[in-house]
Length: 329
Image (cartoon, rainbow, N blue to C red; front, side, top):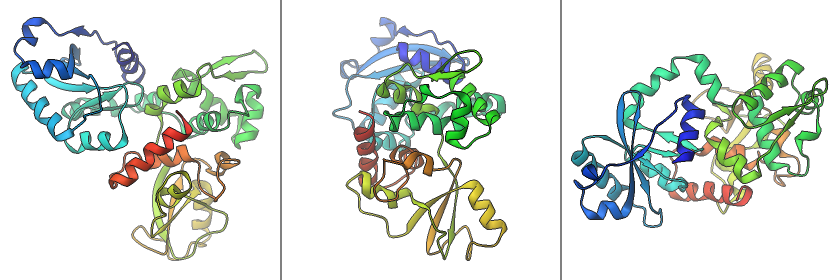
């Protein structure tokens, strides 16, 4: 529960007080529930919540879990939130499909019954910016994870700006974003450097929930521009056991896309169908691919982030788990 407290503080700026559920409340429940969960209580924005910590995910069944949650909610007359340290993409998808509220500390928060309240936060643009990575900051983070041999702590701010093709002001904003979210520390006075203190596993665990989908939008064309990297389900073949999709997807950095669009160099550009699908990316995918792909694909972590919240078949969900297993754990 300490990780959950940190996550709420980091994401929502809220200091939770969590207690074990009182015996008087526990005694209202059948014994089977007590063996499946650990029970805690807390208050969030004037809502009393019951936190159910899963004892294990091995026998996970979302339909059965939903029945249990409904039953517990009736007995205790409180909103229920599932808490688990780890979960597969398949089970995460099933929880969302069944509208079961859950929190994976450091990774994801889905609270279906409190969405109206959570939207209040989203009305505050300053708040939204403060709890998510900027595209430039995400680029730096993913590079550090994927290119362990090229530790970014050795570069000054000026050198980082050159490396990632941003202005000095742009790279400073990215680093401030990383610093505010406790991903890096900054050392030095005149010549400053960023320091990643966490190992790769911890770095990913603490930052995945802060990452954005790199894809801004998807459009379609009949002729593909040269020099693009394969993306979406087309790129899964290299990093997983999946076969490539029937339609070919390619990533294009937004500046390049708008330049081609302005000059009418995209054949039959539209938002519905075409020979090729172009994903317009918020950062340059090429900057992460060197030494990673052998088949001209986008990097695996950006690929994962672009697909993880989509609703695909079970094989695709398993492929996404393969990516994290291979490149993080």
